[in-house]
Amino acid sequence: VLFANSALSRTGLIATLTVAALAAEDMLGSATLGGLPAATATVGIAIGTPPIAWLMARSGRRIGLAVGMGVSGAGAGTAALAVNAGSFPVLVVGMFVFGAGIAAERLSRYAAADITPVSRQAFAISVVVWAGTIGSVVGPAVLGPAKRAAEGLGLEGLTGPFVLAAGLAVIAGVVTVRWLRPDPLSFVAPRDATAPRATVAAQLAGPKVRTAIAALIVGQVVMVMIMTMTPVHIRRAGEDLGIVGLVIAAHTLGMFAFSPLTGFLSDRFGRVAVIVAGQVMLVASAVLASFAGGDDRLLLVASLYLLGLGWNFGFVAASALLTEDAPPETRVSLQGLADAIVWTSAAIASLSSGALLEAGSYSLLALIGASMVVIPAAVLLRYRTALVAAAA
Image (cartoon, rainbow, N blue to C red; front, side, top):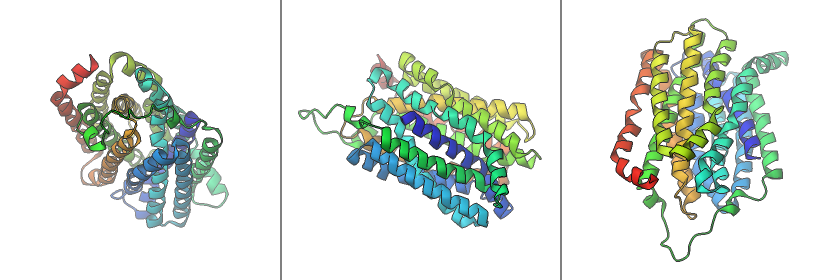
């Protein structure tokens, strides 16, 4: 059920994010604010994460996921109306609401860890992330058909992907309500009444949590900065939406397809080793992207694929590192707060990506992304002794 929920949600998310910058540029005639719709969706995820995490902690993962899917469907529907009417402000509002609901799907990876021993939690998380493979293939593939279907109904062509996302969110919500039983949180061991009560603040001071959050932030920021503006970079070179879909498909394939392998490697060789490998991939992908012209299809496919794979290594391993020592009473709250910090950072990256593209170039954007890997590297060096001792 978690797999199905994630697959449906990711398909809609990838479809909408791929065309959001294009719709914005069509409305405004410039790419300066092209990253704003995706940024507001990410802000929506950041702001929506704490209340959905609170709802999950109070009422269970099932209720939290179902409510999130309903909210995301409403947001995608609003965005569809905005695109058809040519209203940029309403598009921004719709994407914000859409993102707030998608926050539930992002937290669903932790539900898989709820029902799994610590030694296999990375693999459990990776299976849910793996569901995004469906979105990585189907999402870009339906851009053309969805556009033509919308045009056939007399609507603006880019309305189609947003309508599709709304429908998929409704289906995901129904699947969750009907079949996610028993609730994953019921498998989490209760708190030891004799142990001191843990706090989220105390957890945030720990080496594992700080390392995990640093890796999650940088992986998301680098990925969002480059991915968001790649469709604009391609279209400016005269390529059509099909090429955009091909490149984004390669990217999202890297993000999701090898997730089970990432989970296995994280459980086998340790979360930190896999995080380091992911950061190296992010740097390599950004450097490749800096040399890619908008019509350089092969180089763009290679760099965006590697960008996705590097993100996957960091996302799966860091999510497991964040969760493995979290006590029951702070587990969901810590996950929600960490995700809120991550998506806030990603929103800033998405918003700034369009301005950086206009002020500089796609190459500059990519190189800035590459330089950001110094942040998790510094955190790893700061806590290397504690992390090695914990892994022993």
